[in-house]
Image (tube, rainbow, N blue to C red):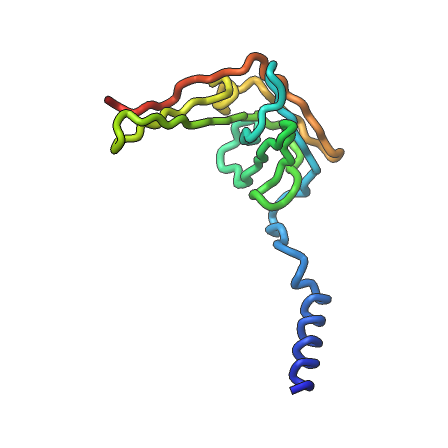
Length: 160
């Protein structure tokens, strides 16, 4: 029994040392990633819980890399590619910012009504109209975007 335990521990140690504990490896065709963070604020302060999406500024069709982040309590998002690899490929990007909230109210005890609101001006939530851009090179980037006044725009509501 003791021999089985020793052999099991030895096997686990060998696997760990050989790299099984390194986490996911980037795909072979993924470009080099540059560390990048984005901070988003409104006139009221940090925009917490917003999703940041980066799209090639050229509008290049067939771009295969999902590049995004989510803002924290100070409005800062660490940009990741494919949701797990920290950093962003070099290039020029359009920056899209979205943040929605839902409010529930009871019309009757059996029927809940839910309204959804965008907390970001619509121009920032559309990659065709966003004026926000970001250029990523070989050096780490840390960009701050100021969106101006806070918004609360109704985007969906229940039918009566």
